[in-house]
Amino acid sequence: MVPPSVVQSLTLSCNTMYRSLRSVQRLNCSLFALQRSIVARNPSHCVGAALLSSRMASSEPYRIERDTFGELKVPSNKYYGAQTVRSTMNFKIGGATERMPIQVIKAFGILKRAAAEVNKDYGLDPKIADAIVKAADEVTEGKLDDHFPLVVWQTGSGTQTNMNVNEVISNRAIEILGGKLGSKDPVHPNDHVNKSQSSNDTFPTAMHIAAAKEVHEVLLPGLQTLHDALEAKAAEFKDIIKIGRTHTQDAVPLSLGQEFGGYVQQVKYSIERVKAAMPRVYELAAGGTAVGTGLNTRIGFAEKVAAKVSALTGLPFVTATNKFEALAAHDALVELSGALNTVACSMMKIANDIRFLGSGPRSGLGELILPENEPGSSIMPGKVNPTQCEAMTMVAAQVMGNHVAVTIGGSNGHFELNVFKPMMIKNVLNSARLLGDASVSFTQNCVVGIQANRERINKLMNESLMLVTALNPHIGEGGSTTRGHLCTRIACQSHFPPPRPRLARALNLHSVWFCFLSFIPPML
Image (tube, rainbow, N blue to C red; front, side, top):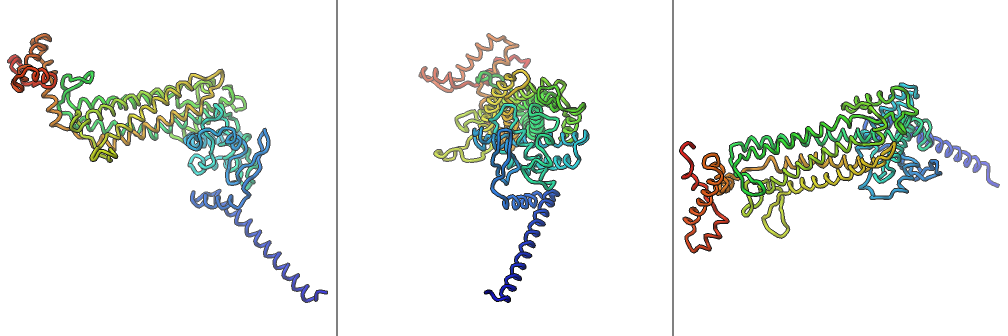
């Protein structure tokens, strides 16, 4: 038999261990509660993210969620749910580089916040609405970017991305309210986050929000930067007279400032064209729901959501005049892409002119001296290339290609819905970003450092036969041509005595414009 003293000692030890375990459990629960509270208040993104990561790391690797097709394993450290997981399984196209543009995700955050606030006005539980607003703000601020894994190449309506956003906001809101991830309680992704909405009207709304913000935050500032730099160069070069060129052949003179003034006007028109396309982009489809009728919304919902989005972004968004057009066609984005395509044409021309004018430096035109930014060759020592011009022309080519895709997508709206939405917005955003960034890069690393090679400019101008054009009003076109050829031969004979074959070769290479002075009437 076990002595009573031993039994008593073991009992005491067991009680002590039990109390210790209970204390640890209570402490653990308190710690989780504190973590949720801190994350909910979110005094710091870094602190909130660290605590959130700690909490998620302590969970099981997967949780089980359900959609209408059945159960799926969802990573426990992700806020998305079953529909997002199913999309990742069904659309393994392109990998991480082909993910939905983050600008679209952030635009969804703005829209979901606006919708939650309006739904709150229409009777949605304030506690649920406020939690949705907080979660949506985190989406807009980029704090939940890792929870949006879907690629562009999915359903053409963007339904899976809308549900990805709904699931993330729902689960984050559930966590804010102290619930269990994946439970859809107390915040349901469809019934609450997507209330009075459909993928068919939310995705085009997010498209327009994202496009407008990219234009105003990236493209227009970039173009303005380039415009101002070119304008400064036009003023700097206004007194430098150079030979003009048409058909890539010598033409009559102009100033280098006038030549750059043409570039200034092109960029000015580029800015105006983009701005002219924006009023249609400011029209939002929200409130049209499935086919444009507004089924399952309240009267005034569309107008109030547009007003909220406008207030959140500072841009003049309004509800679309006709929701059927807003869902079935995306002509506004085709128009905007067309403006971007025209901008690309201008950029191609400007960049090509500048690199050709800077060609050489000894065997090219050499009228411009371009900044030397990096070594240009792995085999030719000392070679420096017009790399900023090359980058700009590649960007222009990409934008032109993007516009072809957008045009095809926009022309393929069928009946009440266009199903090329993700591809279209991907390309519009890509074009706007590339042109905006390239304009800044081209300005900072090329335009501001351009110098005029006055010696070369003067040499080329003085050797040009086209100066004889100034004689046309006085002795006629025929007389000018005859005297031009005569002066060329006289000049060449004085520089290149016989034999005659040498003169014949020289006639194609040299001319001396000052010979014309003997034929200019005294009135000149």
